[in-house]
Length: 323
Image (cartoon, rainbow, N blue to C red; front, top):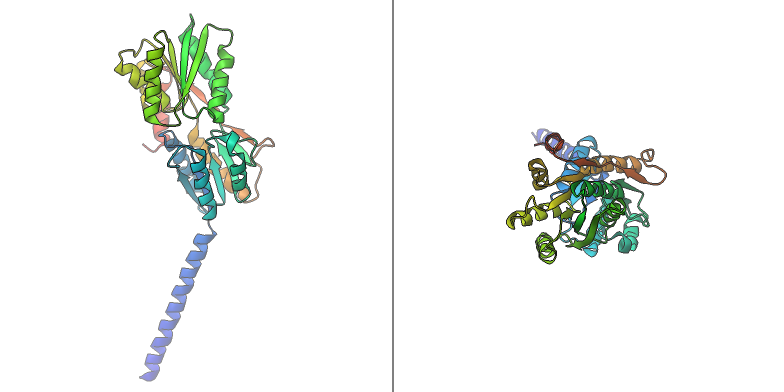
């Protein structure tokens, strides 16, 4: 009888040992997964498209844990803290849309010294980032400038609205517009920033209209700026009387393009930033650097959406989002 109990005890001990070993193996496997994080510049529905791209990449990168982070405020200091917390928690790679690239160089370099650093949307070329994947914002601006000239063949005054005037994406888009309309009768007389504050973005439009009764065109340089322009013009009975040029693919913007109240919108491909960016970072960490060009710049082309192609674009967008 004692021998039987002894055998049972030995068996239980063996089972416990196996369970502990399996548990340890599971922990080791979890710990062996590298973590890649996409950090945005502020809260905006625009980033949901990039997040869908990251989700697709996760399905193809089982050895990695992919995360998507929104800072609680569109401020360089807040974004820096988010990245530092991620690195402290063991993140192996970060892809970031820098809030203020010119003044964030030192902070970005501290991140790059501890983890693989990519930039997206708004580059920080003076930092130690390995690569930038995103649009050529100057070219996007040129496309918007062409839309402005088409909308105002006789010329006219325009005002722009943007979230972060100091960010490279904003500065370059504005520069692209100015290059294109130079020498024409179309003028960009002002650009108002809002620090990615939706309420302030709307007030900027209201104030601009009140101060400029002769304005002919309003340009939304960030994804949420165009919907705020649309809302204010609709509320004031000026929708269709003042031309609207947009950026990105907010549903309100696409709806306005479809109905003809918005001339057109210049869109990017944030889904590809998330998808291709995560895969390139994973490959780089595995010592496959073939996807990174010598200059470290990977341009994902944008396109112009107007009434002729808005339906097809919207259908494809919904498909990418899994809707």
